[in-house]
Image 1 (cartoon, rainbow, N blue to C red):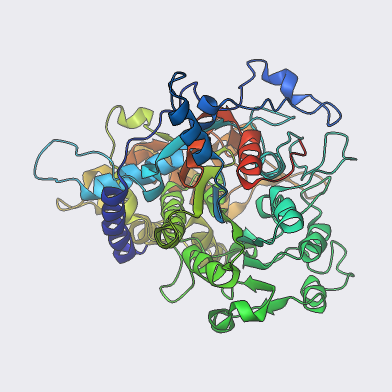
Image 2 (cartoon, rainbow, N blue to C red; image 1 turned 45 degrees about the horizontal axis):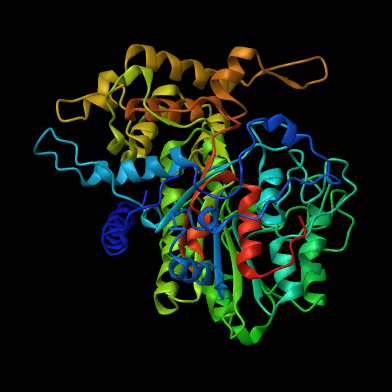
Amino acid sequence: MKANNTWKRLTALIAAAALMAMPLTGCGSTGTGDTDSDSGESATQSASEPESTEEPTNEETTGQETDGDSEGDAAELAETTTVTPKYVFLFIGDGMTYSQFQLASSYLGALEDDSSDDILDGNVALNFMSFDYAGSATTYDSSSFCPDSASTATSIASGFKTYSGVINMDETKTVSYTTVAEQLRDETDYKIGVISSVNLNHATPAAFYAHQASRNNYYEIGLELIDSGYDYFAGGGLLQTTGADGEQTDLYELAAEAGYNVVRTQAEAEEVTAEDGKTIIVTENLADSDSLSYEIDREDDEWSLADYVSKGIEVLENDSGFFLMCEGGKIDWACHANDAGTVVQDVLALADAVQVAIDFAEEHPDETLIIVTGDHETGGLSIGFAGTDYDTYLDNIQDQQISFAKYDSDYVEGYIENGTDFTTAMADVEELFGLILPENATEDDNDTLVLTDYEVEQLEEAYELTMDGYATDTEGNTVQTEGEYISYGTYTPFSVTVTHLLNNKSGINFSSYAHTGLPAAVFAQGVGAETFAGSYDNTDIHDKLISLLGLTDLT
């Protein structure tokens, strides 16, 4: 893990929080967008009967009380809310709601806490947690209160609910929705950029340019990416570049033919300028599933999410304005795997990317809007675990040096291939995760990281299953018992048990390998930020943007 980077980031965040510290508008009932208490009714509406988008009053729009007798103040406030932001940054932490950023903030607080006394000093706020306005958005979709990324990103991008797995189409999968990015492209001279730490044709980035009945139509989504004509794409590699059958024309070739400057190396990316025209940058150091590296695994000379935002600003900045969506997609992946240490580092990486926008906004204070939100919660993450009661040991996370994915590829695959014994594997676990077998513990060791006999037994069972594999049916398909799925999900039993134990011994727990129904926080700073205060639905994020940007209301 990048210990030096963490401390540099901690110092920067403390300084940023001090500069930006202002009272947050509460997430109460004064915000726009009525939250329907009968969510099931809203979830089953068809596209022919779109959700009501009643025009908010001035008070609702700002999340602040106004004096009805003061016409001058009301007029001044109305004038303020009609200003159109020239530069719009939308940051989406996939799978990130209150639990994820609060854990990262608490972790930084634990690192900074003065251990010379027994008084907890508290959190260190991430930069966006100090934004002027805060809101809360419900996340359910037409399928479930535990929605997926395709449907929730559709809600944010186009303002409609749909089924899980569907991108910008209605529940009949016959009607397409137009996204805010597409409207900006068609109705204004704004330039458009899309960044993701995962694949550029994955669900969340796709929701800003594609319209598909299934998020798994990767090739078709890739074709829509090219057809979008957007000015800047950057992040992980495209999936299924030659189609599901491997027989289609390569997407990168088609992109080049369509006039895109396709960049596949970091050296080339560093040289990209606005003069190069429409650009697609794919990270040179493709990690698991052709994504960016997890922040915990990223080499110091490897571009971070923040670097792609910086380059995006360089490519997109112009006299008319731009819209830039940036997704921290691997927060979600790490939460699915129940890897809290990796989650924290990727949340901090997203905050670093947000800082680039904050720095830009300081140079354009009257023209910039920054929004930071999540699409849904992943993993049922909680600060607190039955085994640690009211205690937390969040600084234990700093002992983790590697993500679950890299541990699988760089270590566990070798264990299986070489028939490595449990004790040898545990030596790696102690070095990479800080967990200590009781027989190896010394007086100088952190006793909260010394394994109990019960925990060692869990690791031994998981290691044996990892080495031997799951049972199979008569056709050779893997068969998991119910207990095995509850314990390991679809992940490598030994790896996920290691991260579970480090989580728990730090006072952290996960309840799921899937998504949950928690609301998403919405933080906003800059021109029109007051519009995002209050409690509302995630579709209202789109509606508020449309109103602020003066675009046609298509909902």
